[in-house]
Amino acid sequence: MRVVGSIRAGDNKLDKLQESCGVFGIYAPSEDVARLTYFALFALQHRGQESAGIATADGQKINVYAKMGLVAQVFTEEALSHLSGNIAIGHNRYSTRGSNKECNAQPMLVGKDNSALAIAHNGNIVNAEFLFEQLSEQGYTFQSSTDSEVIANLILSAPEDNWVEKIRYAMNRLQGAYSLTLLTKDTLFAVRGPLGVRPLCLGKIDSGWVIASETCALDHIGATFIREVEPGEIIKINTSGLESYQVKSGRRALCIFEFIYFARPDSVINGRLLSPARQAMGAGLAVEHPVAADLVIGVPDSATSAGIGYAQQSGIPMGEGLIRNRYVGRTFIEPDQRIRDLGVKLKFNPLPRMLNNKRLVVVDDSIVRGTTTPSVIKELRRAGAKEVHMRICAPPIRFPCFFGVDMATRGELIAAQKTIPQICKFIDADTLGYLSIPGLLKAVALPPDEFCLACFTGDYPVPVQLEMDKLALETKQMQRVLSQAERR
Ligand code: SF4
Image 1 (tube, rainbow, N blue to C red):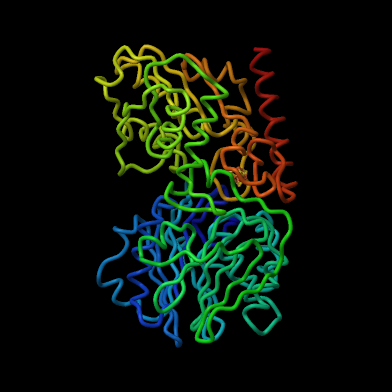
Image 2 (cartoon, rainbow, N blue to C red; image 1 turned 60 degrees about the vertical axis):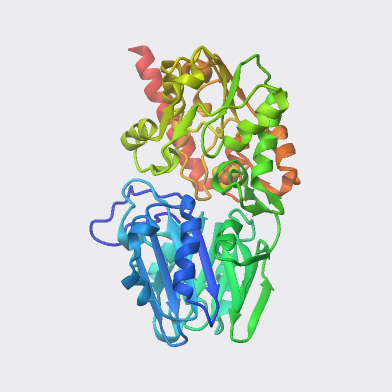
């Protein structure tokens, strides 16, 4: 979900939002669906920590409760008690600067009476600005400034008279990434965009069905994994049972960062459990970038599995050299630079007894802006490390993401601005090795055409011409500033 425009007084036009969220849906007549959704949102908390919400339906009406904060902060017994019904959807959200407003929290409700629709969205719509303008001209008003509300209103605007056809109408116009759970007063829908950028899976619970961003949410509520929701598929669940409609398909583009970083290691995507896939990334790094060292550590938690893989492949012992404070959010997607910088110190505590006088291999999932890694290395050296050899699972990130991941602008991406030796010097590592794209694809052991690799290659699976034009302009402006600075 991202911000597409400024609609209400006080909203900020520069308010950019790109994020990876968690979505959930359940149809289960004999269950406390709000409570099960609450537990599922706990399991998906790693996908979004800024707001959380649940919408339920009982055949007559839809109730929504969504607020800023972690799942545990948002919901009370009282709030859950008002969420009655036999169908529910839930959402955890990430956002960036300026967009952390309650009006953008989801699920979001649009329309009323028989056309009321609640939406929970993970992804980013590339042509949202255009659709927003079109819908505004048609008289649609917006309560938030997100592309998720654009999707919901686009569905409502369809001339067709049944929900599946309305969703199909919207899918034919949307470009980008979207995994959705939708709720009408009596039906649950799951929709996955044709590219399949964001994951979505289907599970079975005693008396009903469950939809979730990741399989770990199914495990936590005792549901059984049935299958992935296919790219381009609409699933409809109500008293008539489950129906599936394949609307669109073509090039697939699952975000490779789900494998590297986003999803939990105990989730299964495209039939692959992520923990061993990440171990294989670490093993690949050991083959591509061997080094003489005394100890391997993985930057916790997302690179722990990769660290194990490096250690196993290289024969260098694995140890715990950094302890993570689990209750501080990920620096990758926190709202601004000042908080990101502070987050590094709050987040990791090195163990001098493990590290003193050691030559370390430090395995991490990615380097984005290059703001976190120098601080981690500094802390490791301060704790006594003799050498620090950084090994990174993600190949160099040289292009921004237009599909919902807040990385940075191109100007902020360190690998777009510096060579690998320059980055090594900048982060103050003794050596630096990135896993190659072929090495990464070998580790995930799935066909390359299943994935989006655009932030490594610049080969976007849909046209992003407008954004690319903005990038070109930004690069030209930056070059002008640099050359002016050089002349001075
Ligand atoms: S550009 Fe990168 S982060 Fe964005 S969807 Fe593609 S692989 Fe994922």
